[in-house]
Length: 147
Image (cartoon, rainbow, N blue to C red; front, side, top):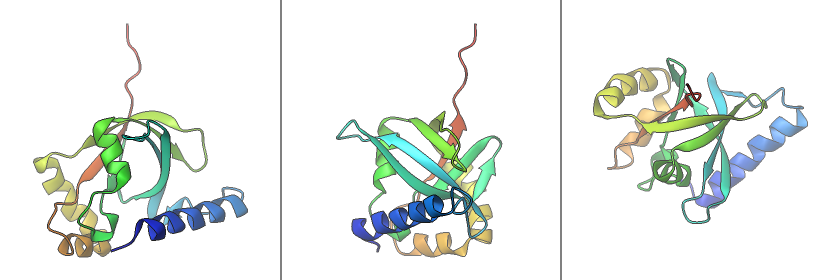
């Protein structure tokens, strides 16, 4: 399983690619959209930002997979949004937008998981490495205040 150091290093390299390219590269990986997710740290209360791939859209929501490479532990970003679903999501270097994160329920996951693993076999492989069910998270635009 990837260590915290390895995961942080991969994220740092990804950010360097984006910076060196002036934001023109690094927003698509293996045919997936890259999102910049900012959560609030559940322990620190500080913003925490990570780059993630989104293998699927569900309506206007971006779907991300809390796989952590098949590790038995959930990724920190997942634990953060589970505790505080108000997040910020940036796309292609644009200003991040307020969104709300929701974990797919059993029925929605059962419908989406086969679509994701059909196109991106690595996620199916990650699931075989762990006994935990890898969660799917939907990042949806936050509803505007309405009168």
